[in-house]
Length: 284
Image 1: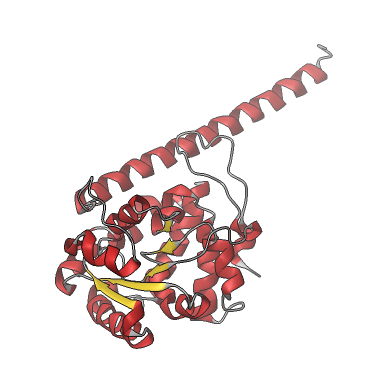
Image 2: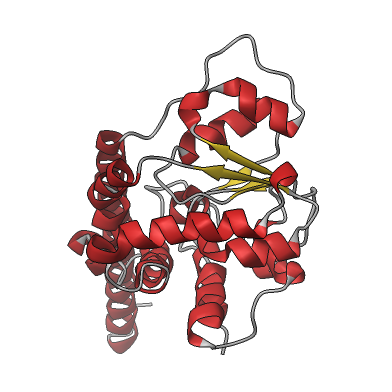
C-alpha cells in the first residue's frame, strides 16, 4: 500500500503554523522543469533557491517545501524512497515526479539529491547544476543541522502527535537511513564524494555546471542563459545558527498545535457529558 495513503487533512486546530495542505497525488505539471540542482543539502541550496527566485524561476523545490511549507509532500517522498531502496511499490516515473514537483521549474537539496539518476532520466531536457563544498566543512555543517534534526528527540516525539511532524520526521529519518546507509557520522563523507562522481558521470559536460555559491551570479547566469542581476548581491541564507533556532521554534509551534487539539478534544468530551446529563435529568 502506498505510504501516501496515510494522508489526512490538516486539523482545524493547527493554528500556530502556516503550513499549506495540498495533496500532491491530485497534481500535474503546470510549468516546465528547467534545472536540476543535484548537490547535497548544506551546499548553499537555500541560497541558490533564493537566487533562482530572483532570476524568475517559478519555485525551486527544496526540503523546506515538505518540512514547513506543505508537509503532505513528505508522504510522496517516502513512497519514492521506499520504492528505490526497499523495493516497495513502483519506482517513480515522470508522471509521479510531475505530481510532486509539477509546480516547480527547478529542484534542489535533499531528498531530491537521492534521486539524481531518476530525475535526470525523467527530465532529460533540464540543465544540471551540481552545488559543491569542501567535504569536511560540509560534513561538520550537516552534523550540526540536518543530521541533528533527524536525531532531534523533540521532533521524534512530536511525530506521534503532530499532523505535520508525523509526515515529515519519518521521511527525514528514512532519507538518512537509506541515502547515507544509516551511518551519516562515519559514512557521510564517502557517500558525498561518491554522489558527486556519479552525477558527473551521468551528465554531458555541456549540460552540467559544477558550482559553489561563493562563485556568485556570473557563472550561474551564463550557464542558465539569464541576465546577471545588477540590483542585489548573490543571496546568503540559512547558516547553522539560524537552522537550529528555526527548528526549535517550529517544534514549539507544533507543540501548541497539539495542545490546541487536546483542548478541542476535552471540550467535545465535556459537551458530550453535559448533553448526557441534561437528557438523563430531563432538563431540556
